[in-house]
Amino acid sequence: SLATRFDAAVYPPQTDTDALNARPAFAGLMYPVITMGNGTHLGSRTNLLGANPSDELIAAFSCEHLVNDRTPTCFICLAADDDGVPPIENGLAMFQALRSKSVPAELHMFEKGKHGFGIRLTKGLPVAAWPDLFLQWAGNNGWVRNVSTEGRGENPTSGTSPLRSLSWTQ
Image 1 (cartoon, rainbow, N blue to C red):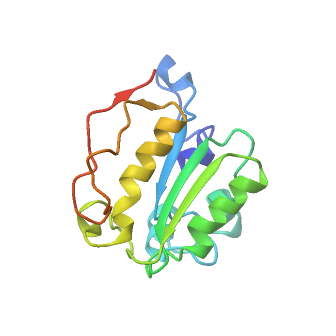
Image 2 (image 1 turned 90 degrees about the vertical axis):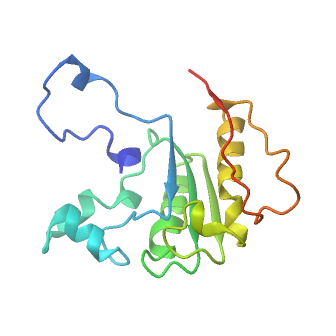
Image 3 (image 1 turned 90 degrees about the horizontal axis):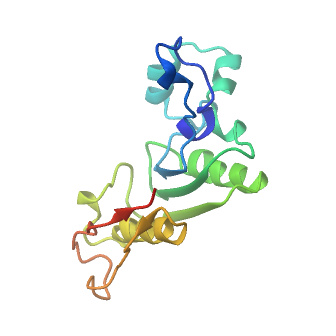
């Protein structure tokens, strides 16, 4: 994940741009694959590390073990019924790792939503509130301006599009 491996050299520098800091200001982790160890999404691990990765390679790519004081603040959102990426071993483990290093983090775990809910698959579910929660979090941290959830009504499961005009701060 870029949130924990932003300093990793992944290719030989080609231009001066490659020397720029790659650390993100924040990370939005949606139903994330965090660990490459027990509880990983095997397809993701195989695609990233190959069919038989060494213990060293698994450790080097298990983000929950790579959190440090330079890790950016994170917004984590997932569903408890995600049967593709186990939420405890991944999203919750990342939240705990962030908290253990005093890195600010916000976690939203919804009862239902499965994996890959995005925006389209949230209609009628409480997880439909996640875009507004993210925008409010981003606004509270100063990354976006003009965040407003007004006009959405009382019901976050209405299916109304949460996307609105925003101004990004520089």
